[in-house]
Length: 418
Ligand code: MLT
Image (cartoon, rainbow, N blue to C red; front, side, top):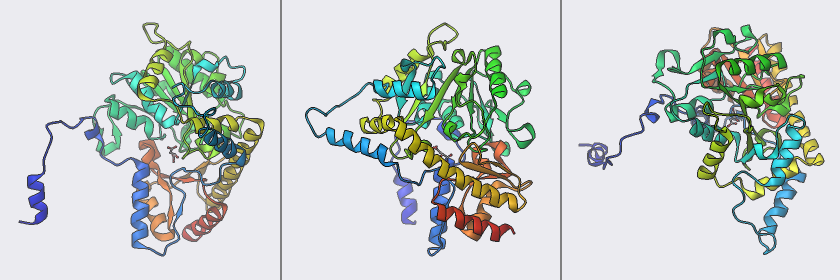
């Protein structure tokens, strides 16, 4: 008997049954899976100069005006006067006030509607805890995978349907070039929650005021709650709403979640926020914000005080300018990548209102295209199917990268597809 088999035979098992919701997952979470494939590729080609334009992780340094504020706060923690332990789980007052005045000025959002957090992704899961397991959800397809995955963990979904790459009873709102990446709401079934990201990750498309007005009306007609992800709003070039709360009536049907990650290079620092307006009520009249507050107090002890000092510096006049400079840099990268693919004859979307370029490979499997690009030119992208069934036939190229890498990747794409 092989030693492996012997080990298997004697393996101790607890009497705890596996969470059946976890067992619904058939494929790995897309971003670690991409990292695994990149590492396997490096093992195979140790001398390859691999360029990562896959996971949307920022690469440029955090502006000095922000890090110096974090440094100061950090140093103060070593003094008796400057030391602080637990802060309010909802975030420090000055930061909540600065978020309200910077992003929601004149929109009727107040400081106490804002919950500071360790990032939008974490808030998405905490919101799912608020909603519980019996709600139904709709989601743009393609979209950021955390919405569907957190819904599966909660047990809001039926079994994975392998043949169609989706989970039963989630309403996938297909967004394609044909519908201008905005779902035909007449064909969307009523659900309790509607996750909507604009500018969208991965397609880079941004909903217009008219479209968001339709979405808010749709939620009102159905008594649904929109969870609006505006993590890329500062990348917007077009004159579209930066916040769902620019739409009249949205405070009664929407929550908004956002983040400093892609504005200030805070993917590692971790800082975001969620707005739950006091006007948003459950069917029994109970304020959603009160339940969110309960979950925040139960599952979270507040964002790092050093990160919050950085967040406050981000929202100073110098900080806002510095963030715009970093965003402009990434948008130039997006322009270079979009132009490269366009000049090769591809249909290219995104790049203008978001740091992602969405490229169509009609009729091809997105994993095949991903593998072809990795294998032949050592560039990491993301296959569209990783963002849901509506992403098949596309790949996403991230504009987060050093300029020399973006230029080098563009040359390699030209060699591959000329
Ligand atoms: C992405 O690559 O889509 C994002 O960076 C992932 C994230 O924000 O967690």
